[in-house]
Length: 274
View 1 (spheres, helix red, strand yellow):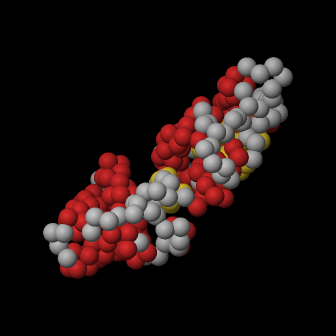
View 2: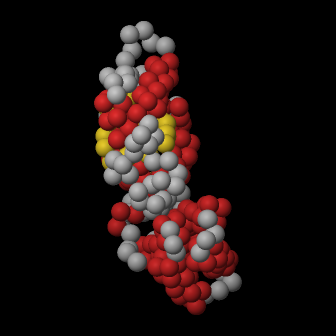
View 3: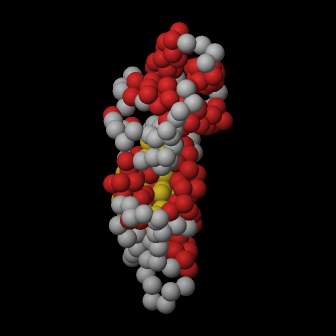
């Protein structure tokens, strides 16, 4: 523990629950450290990974995300999306030299003022024991540059990669991820994503020609429209993006001359809408 070190803690607090809990803690005079800074957000599911990186790159020593308890989200699934992101982010933070314990997710309702004070105090003490944040990057990279290589896969999460990857590998990896994380409640996501994975693999193996590409595009459009959640919808959207914006990458992969480069443009921020 660094003597005299007072960490800066950023709290992204859900408007309906955690922020109300923090307000209740103040009303009931439950004490918690003054170096805890609250940022009110509509829902914990609205906290993008870029927000977390921006906080750390701007000098935060710890980030706490607070949301409604599972099943109580005012937007139905927002806290589940937040939980998926949290699991992915903890693995990625260590890649850039940030201890995963510097990020914490807690469910705190509007009636749990005491819990908010306790969590804020415990988290601050934990960050004090870790000391000031030290971000170790091989290359100088600010949050804007990082955002360019963050590919959105909908409200359900984020996928990170560097530009030395092949878009084909990324899409196949993402479809595998969707298969493993699907809730299996709808046919487009449960079966459609598996079929897209099979068709794409057949195209790359040379088993089917242009008809396969047309089938893959139709599958991507249908799955993008009809899946119940963002995870399934973005599976279709990602494949459609690859076909329309990265076709040369797919073609070179099929021909065995893949250069393993993801285009820096147009980027996922300009992915074709479904």
